[in-house]
Image 1 (spheres, rainbow, N blue to C red):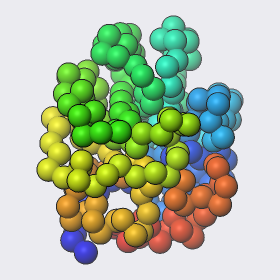
Image 2: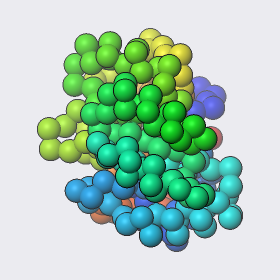
Image 3: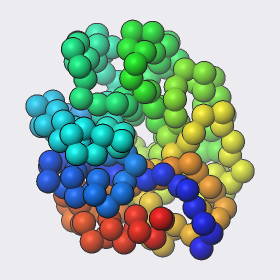
Length: 216
């Protein structure tokens, strides 16, 4: 296995206890789902509790709030005062104007944009977004869900990818795929969720530890 500096995000946490356990294992980012139709959805109150604990005990970890096609005014209202997250991850069909507006109105929060990849041509649509986001996340396309499906993007779509911003790979990240990802695809970060779960939102801490230790 090659030496790696690949970042790790564990997404879809639903409890304060597991968030702190995952943070202790050395994750670089922890994500919670603020999309109501997701089986990993948690309320704004629980999210704030999780993120406040992370901020107190592991302040260097990025705290990522995942939203989908959410009205901008609603997001801005959430960020009055001191927000508990450090990153907003857009995981829907948000366009460039949407990204520009959030960037202008909430300039002190990081902005990541996810793109669901069904065909190689989908990758061509990402370039115009690069000036308006801090990171790009590539996830697999699934007609039933916008994320957390456990399905992989075809590996041949991902080789030799280059963006002007850091990029994260999501979708079916498991131990069986790790060596190929690190050797041939080389993303800046891995976004891991369903492959380390006992059930949606409940992580298998032993599996999570094995994966993070392997990457480190």
